[in-house]
Amino acid sequence: MKKKLILGLLAVVLALGLTFLGCSNPASNSTVDEPLVLKDTVNGKVVEITISRTDPSKAVIKPQKGDYFVIKLDGVVISKGTVTQVSTSGTMTFKPSEDSPGPKTEFTGTLSSGGELSIPSIPYEGGTITGVNADSSGGSGGGAPTSPAPPSGGGNPPPVNPPAANVFENTTWKAEDTVTNGGVTYTYVLTLSFGTDIWTTVQVENGEPIPGGQAGTYTASGNTATCTTADGDTLLATVSGNTLTLAQGEDEFQFTKVTPATNVFVGTVWSFEYDFINGDGDNVNREMTVSFGTDTVTWNEIFTSIDDGSKIENTNSYPYTVSGKNANVDTGNGLSTATISDNTLVIISDESLLFTKASGGASSAANPFAGTVWKFEDDKNAIHFEMTASFDGTTCSIEQTVNGIPRGDFSGTYTVSGNTATITFDFETYIATISGNTLTLRPFMTFARVY
Image (tube, rainbow, N blue to C red; front, side):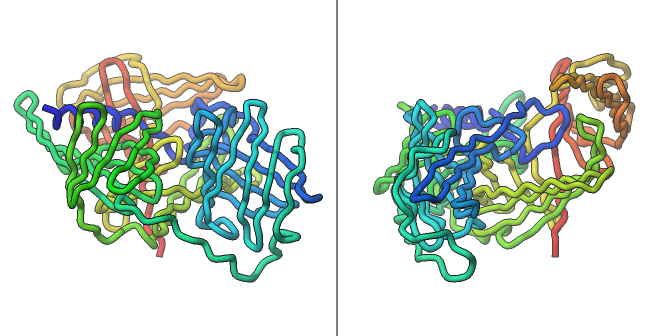
C-alpha cells in the first residue's frame, strides 16, 4: 500500500505545472518591474549586485530561488549566475554559471529585513572581495579586494576545488508501478536524478513522457540525503547498495539505481525562430538557440523588431538532468521537459492559456474539438487582449484583438487524440486539451539541430 501512496504523491507533485523559459506571449500574467540593484563601496571601488528573474520581464519583489544575478566591480562583470537557494532567514546561495568570468565556486550571502545584502566573500578571477554590505543607497563600505582591480582579460583563474563527493551526486534512480483503472492498464516510470546540489524527476506514462516534473535541493550526509522541494517540503533519501529508499513521514518508496548512460544532450546545439505580434502591436522576430553543456543548458534569445531592426538579447544558463532521451531543465521558477527525436529537440511546458467555451457545434467523441469556439481575455497595462480559437473538422483558426483592434490572425491544422489536439501553425506547435468548458493551450516548441 505504501508503494502506491508514494507514487501517487509524487505524481500529484509532478502535475503541479512548470514555467516555460522566456515565454513572450502578449497574454502573459507576469508583472513588469525593475530588477533589484544593490551597491556597496569597497576600498574606493563600487560593487554592484543586480538580481532579476530569469525571465527579465518579471518583477523582483523579493529574491527567490532561480533568480539571475550579475556582480560588477567598477563596472566590470566579475561573476554571474543563478540564486540556487533562499532560506526563510534570508540566507542566499549564489552559483556562478559556466560562462561566468573567473571561478565557478559558490558563495553565500544574507539579505536582512531592511534590504541590506551582506556577502562575506566573493571570488573572482585574480582575487576575492570580502565584507560586502550592499543596499539600494550604495552600501556602508566593506573590506578590500585581495587584489587591486578586476581582471583586464587574459591569464588563468585560480584553481577551483570541486565539491566534496557523495553517494548521491550524478546518480539516477528508477521506480515503476502499474495501475489498472476502468479496464485500462497504465505503466508509470518515475526517474529520480541527483546533480551536485539539486534533484529532479521525470515521469513516463505508457512509454510517453509526461510534461512537468519536480525539482529541489538536497544535502547529503553519508548514505542519507535530505531532499527539499520548491514548496519547502522535505523527503529523506537513503542509499543501500543499488537501492534508494525515499521516505516522507511513514510512507516510503524504493528506487533502483540506473546504470549511467550516454548523455545524448551534451555538446548539442539547437535553434528555433518565428515571428509574432506583441501586446503593443509591434512585429517581432524571436530567434532562440539552446546549447547543452555537461550539466548546464544555455538558453539564448534575440528579439528583433521587424519594423525598426532594434534588438534585445537575453542569455541564461540552467542546470539539467538526463534520463535517456529526456531531460528536465531547472529554470528555478519551474521545469521544462526536453526530448530528443532524431534531429529534433522538443521542449514542452505547462505555462498555459485557459480558454472558456463560447459555443459548441458538431463535436463528437472522435473529435470533441470540431465545431467549437473558445475565448481568452487578459488585461495588462491598459491593454485589453482577446484571443478566439475556432475549430472546424481539421483546422484551428486564431483571431486576436488588442484594445478591439484586430492583430495577427492565423490558422493551422490539428490532429486529435482523445481530448487532446496537436495544432501545427507555420511558426510553432501547440497542444490543446479540453476539460469540460475549459480549453488549455500550452507551448510545444520544436528545435532543429545546428551543425
